[in-house]
Image 1 (spheres, helix red, strand yellow):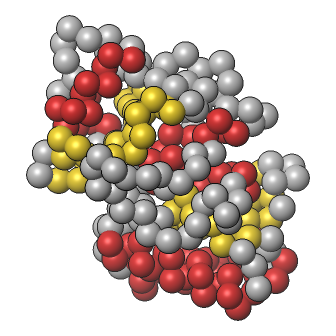
Image 2 (cartoon, rainbow, N blue to C red):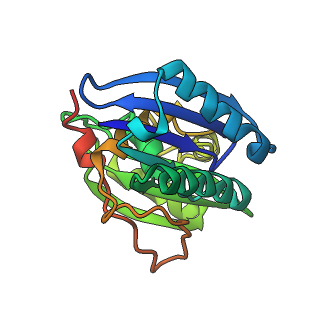
Length: 230
């Protein structure tokens, strides 16, 4: 399966072409930016498709991050993904930024909980917690930072996401300390692509993913599939 992955949800503009048969990214580009996604995305996609030697008609699906994230960035990414999918007659799937952040740390034998956190401003974060093997511990939500810090009860965590440093700075001194802190500004586009091949359009719709505590209902989480990845 060939997947074109797109991410404009946070402070990056990124695209990749992934082939699930060898399980490799054929071509990718990522540019750190907080503004200008609308102008940068389509030329970036064109460059990635050219580097991959692929035509849109040769793709099997398009994957795009759906949030939480920047309202403008989400609209840019979703519009591009839907437009390409419509023109090429291909399905499009949506992945949450929280899941994409966590994917790199998940493994079948993972022992540490993984907290994905995105800055929601005003002393709040979007966050979720999964076990090292991808099992859900706290479902995605937006909450005060103090509530997110209560996840210390699960043990020494891996912190990922653009708010990872915020949580690390305020981590309780009497709790097991984080074993890894990865404050990357946006998810790795390679994992967005991998997840895009693992989900289905029925369980991962390409529509904006907005959180409202405490009744947010997340998409089916594909992270347990990640734990079984080679």
